[in-house]
Amino acid sequence: MRGAGVYLNRYWQLYAMLLLPIAYFLVFKYGPMYGVTIAFKDFNLFQGINKSPWIGFDTFRQIFKMDAFYVALRNTFMLNILDLIFSFPAPILLALMLNELSAVWFKKLSQTILYLPHFISWVIIGGIVYQAFSTNSGVVNHLLGNIGIGPIPFLSDKYYWLITYLGTGIWQSAGWGTIIYLAALTAINKELYEAADVDGAGRFAKIWNITLPGIRSTIIVLLILKLGEMVQIGFDRPFVIGNVTVAEFSQVLSTFVYKMGMQTGEYSVATAVGFFQAVVGLVFILTSNYISKKTTDEGIL
Image (spheres, rainbow, N blue to C red):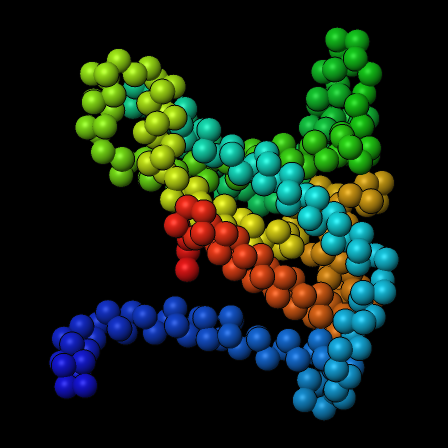
């Protein structure tokens, strides 16, 4: 303890800097966890959390009898699985292509252009999407009409909307994810590439045998985290891009929670769904980490 006191006295400035982030997590992350008890109560806004009566798992039984819940759950899994298939490899491919560029100035310019969409609000992106892909007045359909192709219902047909949803997500997130893989690529020993050149290995052979194995641990960690979010989905993207005509695909758990909590006042139901997402997400991330540990001996825990 004495040694700890000396260390604390010597570096007290660093510990003082930690107070603000610790306070942030205590107030905004751990404090609200008390509100999870709403899921087990017949919550009344005027009675408050403490005075609302306990009802056990009745709210969960109510949820599992709702058809709308299963539609939202199905869509959440569907959109996340499709994102995993199409969006997850996108930053890896971009990082590999940028890593092969020899012109440093072009490489930096490309990186800047690619990750800029990450900083654009989904509200603004939604406006861009509607201006570009609207059936009657969208720029894309206007150009297609000029070359004799009829208007395509990008936002009103559920299958075309699905393609638009996935494409927009890749455009918005791929550039930012590329930064992580480019950082991992810098840790690869350059002597491996030199040895491969001596052995006469081509560019694709070096990518397959040196580059990809060099970032395998990064890919596995991000894949585990992505699998842990299979039942979680951001609210902004499906809410802003979605509409009534494609609700069969765009209604997900996050919008379901918003509808139940903010529009109908079913706070217990909304909290229970959120708690369900957290528990299932924890199971997914622990399971994927366990499988990764057993198969590749790498994981996050």
